[in-house]
Image 1 (tube, rainbow, N blue to C red):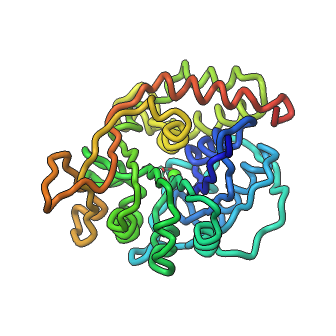
Image 2 (cartoon, rainbow, N blue to C red):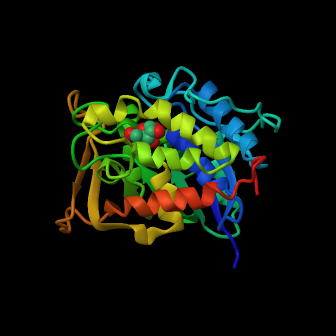
Image 3 (cartoon, rainbow, N blue to C red):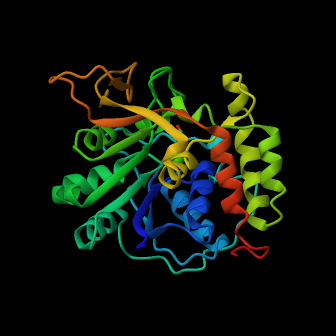
Length: 316
Ligand code: RIB
Ligand code: CA
């Protein structure tokens, strides 16, 4: 069966990096066309370098492109307190093994969607600036997007403000452009990712995988987890971005409902707030599939099974 073409847009960031490794594990169902990076958890120079180093760790020859260095309107908000000063604190990574590519991440998204022999699946793990700019610059690409699965938003409280989840808060205007573009959109927000908790027992399973990837992931999540779980009174840090890849690999691990979805862009207190309702009317039609429940243990079993495929050196 032909592999599904996939592009990942991300801001690594520890959880983004784990999501990339889940995608890059040997024997994947996807044809990963490329990884576009955006400013978010840390500035673009770091997210771009981190994505290239994760590919070197996985010994994966995948194009990595630098995208937008700041949100559409607001100045950049970053999260070094959670991810460390460079975005991947806790473990050493190899130097990038591929030369930098002289193509902007936005143009890569446009070119791939325009040239695609078949519609492309997009997984977005950071602020939506790159995808929003691509849709603004070349609206017809919307017809070449088979599915976009977005880590972002929250039906409940936010994580960077009481009102908003980080990716939607950093660039609410970009989130609004994407949500209003009429794309086949699936949203995986904090309501789901706060059920996927890296407890000490689960962390130990990564370290026990017996390969460098498992050790590296355990070190990233040990650092990243410090404080995140405590902050919410949870037994472990929520693992956000790998949920997007887990959904693409095993959608049955998740359940949700069609909802009307919008993003607040004009309020000071509610900047980036997710506005959603499953109670649909002609005025408020379904604009996204919003996930609400997840088999968290199933996500971790998938992660451990896939990351174990990397051989002792790295790849299997
Ligand atoms: O709110 C969590 C999201 O913001 C995750 O994608 C994390 O990596 C940050 O980008
Ligand atoms: Ca992210």
